[in-house]
Length: 234
Image (tube, rainbow, N blue to C red; front, side, top):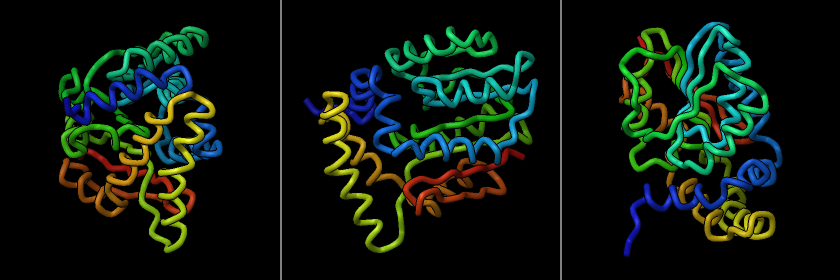
């Protein structure tokens, strides 16, 4: 039986949820935290605002935004893996973040009315959805006019040599780390496929614009291993 991308990704994240945070640190050499911190500076999240974190996983970015919006704000984290959300819920509870709500849902059909949020983010999740453009359109739809849509994601390095090394790492080394640290070789081998097939930085700008975002900018991190794209809803 051939699995759809959606079914396969769901199975991957249901299985690796308990080791996901540890593995993120291992496979990115802790760089993902630095990338997110820089992205948050660019977003300049204001107290009392409302944010949505799509494909929130174990809720690290959700929590980072909750700390910025404060008790008068609201942050919703959405993910389709209940096991990932369970890990996130434990974190939120331990930090007593009453302004956070984690919900089980589909990024392709966000269960919110138009013009609901000031910020909508997706971190290392867009590459795993069946239709990149549909998710970006949904993110744009639920943003308020003037709101900010943000995608932090692995990207395609362009420098010859480094590009080949990057894909060698993703294809051969990262699954070995998965087997060593999380007993999940096949699940981490999948991440190579999703990173390899994901659009480059300029292609993603075009997708943002097609989805309705204006004034789209991007910044590469670590030589293009990752990138942040930011667009505005007018």
